[in-house]
Image (cartoon, rainbow, N blue to C red; front, side, top):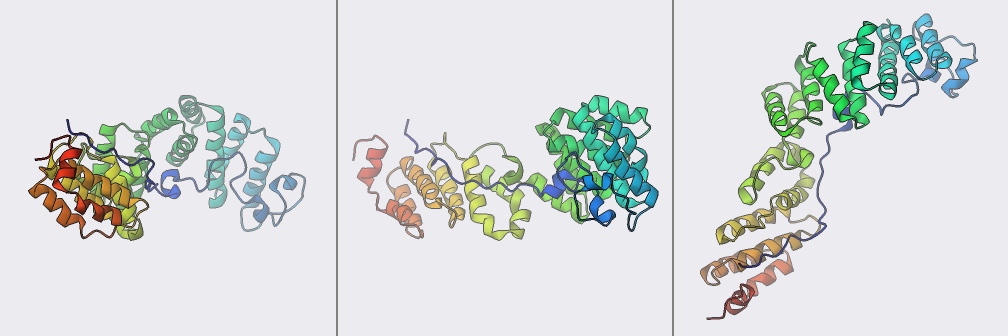
Length: 335
């Protein structure tokens, strides 16, 4: 069998990670066992929040009783379920900022103390299985790479009402823990949504550069399909397009193909990588393989005419391959 040149090693691949705000929603920061609210600002201090535990200050711009209760919860309770219990009534505080902070703090404590099954039972026992708490709990488990726990909370959320952008954000989060079949279903759900948030999440959900190979198979057809799925993201960041071509070409490198037309088609696809780091290596190797499986006659002439227009010297050099050299590469005796 004719030998095929392998893919160049250690190419710089593109990873279009979803925005942190999208996969971490509804959290606004990484989970940590400290007050989510800016307590210092709330109490008119520039010092660390722990100094407020002994200070006698009045809060600003918030309900005094709620602010003091929030501060005292952190000052008086250990960071375990005792603190979680103190935060439950504050998760529905009249002061929006305190309610939001207490909710995030509550699920952060639960994540640090309990697995999802126990955390869900704990919230149910305290009549606090609010959808926003479950959303924050799922995000907290996900942020800490606790995928099985994330799945359990996502399943529990399916009993809660889902609508508009909230539904899209929940579906998008599920992508991180779903199997391939379920991922395909989620992508279809997001594609049907019309809001701007859903459209943006759908673009990321469908792009191979965010989630790995989506199109099955190798060669140019599979590569073009994956590229098409990434077009919405690349239109926003056109400077990344060459590296996107390179990355997708690597993912669909047709190592087992021995058909000239297929290799030439794939080599033409790789020319979209012009401008990316080491693109000349990728393109030259693809065209070299087209030569290796050619008939060393008219097909070789077609490759020569194509590569002569390349901006890369090492690619143009392939246009100088003679019929005798082509036959030697294939292990065939010159004719």
